[in-house]
Length: 125
Image 1 (cartoon, helix red, strand yellow):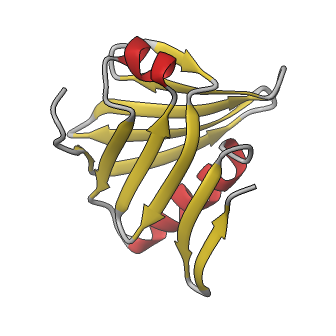
Image 2 (spheres, one colour; image 1 turned 120 degrees about the vertical axis):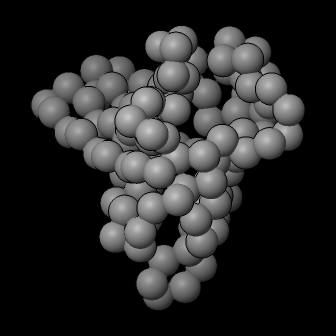
């Protein structure tokens, strides 16, 4: 994959007793799923083909409608993507709010920079 960003035109969030999942899709096809499985508190990134990388995201940013995921080398290799994976979110502001809330819970152990209505928030712990 080259440095071109992926694109998603839909963002859905699903939560069950077992997991919390952010589903990013384009033209009705899943581009990527970012999931937290509560059993073991394992976060996963799943590509459109269903390939799963666990403990994948080291850091992430959501600035405006641009999502950037810093993947560990093993996860990037498993998924066949660059370590700096970018996704352009062509969704409305309400969907961006749902994406932000889901990522803050799902990727809570990763460092982040995120725009909120109150301003930019960072956590590098």
